[in-house]
Image (cartoon, rainbow, N blue to C red; front, side, top):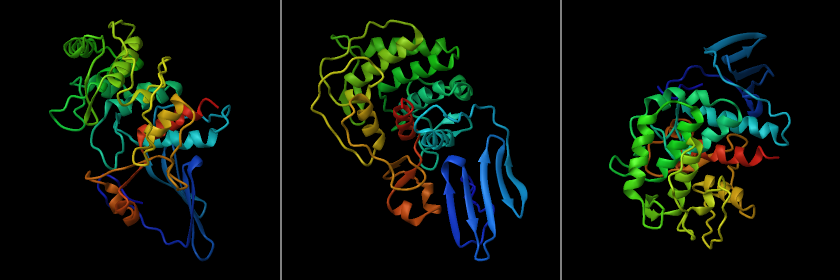
Length: 313
């Protein structure tokens, strides 16, 4: 067992076999004498059961809802995805992957917020929303203002119900500043100028707040229109990308139009991931394989997109 923050070993186990039980948040170990150790987690903490004795590793009662999803076809998968989403909320701050990133990304958090709404857990984000001091997350660079975050942040504020009229007013002013003559907003998203995606998010976010910013969606896709399954509007597009590096894109495309190729990690656990390049990856102190493959295991956007597709079954 390793502490992610300090990278220190908490406890070592001698074992010959292991069994990961993702939907039970548990790992079972067995040595050559058939003695077993069960490591498991619940909302009260992390525990080790050995020789019929239960020892707490971490005890921290969490004030969260932990649904069983018993009325859903993919209930056991939903449990795993839900755990992966919560795993990446560190000290109430939603982070794309806590092994790789250090701060929140508004668009990733948008999808996680939708999951927390469905599970009645948006209160988890309230302390973070109260602390936000910028309408841009500056996730890629300190001077890069990606406009998709404006709508995402409006939605997050609306979903949590936190009074941030100060931020909302700044967002409205910024949208007016970057508004195009056709009623859209435009800016650089993931390296190129886009209108459709940031405008769609601004419409989604303003609707969540119950305000009308008089925005108009473009009639063409300039990049990420097929990410916007949460709007009623659909447009035809020739842009089609199967991306194993960013699998959350493909799950969003599928949600928009269910004829896409879906991507999951070929592992028992976790189900979500991202392939990263250049970022500090703490997976390296866990696994040389994952380090060499640049895998960021468990990703809040990917897990959220998967969850929001499968919850409908």
